[in-house]
Image (cartoon, rainbow, N blue to C red):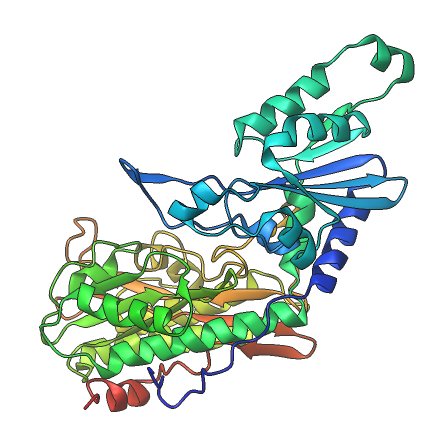
Length: 454
């Protein structure tokens, strides 16, 4: 087993309980009010080429409320005068299809293992869903994922039968459920945090394995294979396509080709995370492929690290979401002023998009959870929201001096250097917890571990 620098990865946390998922359903049911119907459609399958499909990944909302991770599924939650009833439409057992694509749980199996009142064949969805729609006033449904469901909802909303005219039955409003669901998902429960911690442990161990097995001349995809092999070995999968950029490639924010050799003396930037039961980690580390920072690399690296530490310190309950970003910018701009890379002359001018923004052009943080860029409004009513206990966010400042860029002129010693350092942070009642604390990031730690695999 990948030992992950001595980390114990032997015991994965339990999946979220049926009882907790029922409680989540009760929460969203109350938010949707009486006489409502919530519809969650699982992600469709996607074809890669001809009859080969991409690996399937369920809708995060479906995972949140039901934990159902197979395609061709629709979840419905009706609230009638405060009484909640849940139905999951899924494919029934089919021996012929199962011979080709795997055994299905079936209707009885779903009812016995998942937080639903009834499982119904997806083949019966039109009639059953139409009846459910007849009994509600407000439909909470995100359009565009399944044309069949969209058509059933549209037909119900537009129907003008005599029965509806006489009784006033049937839906009158189509509502987007995403704002309501996003607020629920923004605050993580204890069980969610255990899954996030475990995901972060695996990701940290995977980055360490890449560091330990690194040597000059390796290809970017070889480092990627170590990282993602460690993900898989420990029962996870990547939460986004890994970024492995050596040298000047590290200055491209979303570089994904990962097909170049990393030359002796180059820094390599690896932005890679995994997911467990859908819960994502997101780590970036930058380090010298040969195990030793040059002086210019070390100067810029320490500046980025100092800015990240300042940003992490600003991750406190009651602080605004912008506080970490502003803290990172201030440290970064002052450092670039001191190095003569930006002109200022004042710190405020150095922090401007025209100066600091030339080399640090992205935000410092995003939410993290069932999606690597998780749901949740950053600035309700155009005001940065305050951080609260249970929120999880990334902190990832960076500096990028692309030699390929025609818009910048810097001293040759800085040219071609790209550095980003990213950790995952939980806001607690009295401060924060660094979920990715197992992954080394000081210059001393990195130089001590790179290339040490026997």
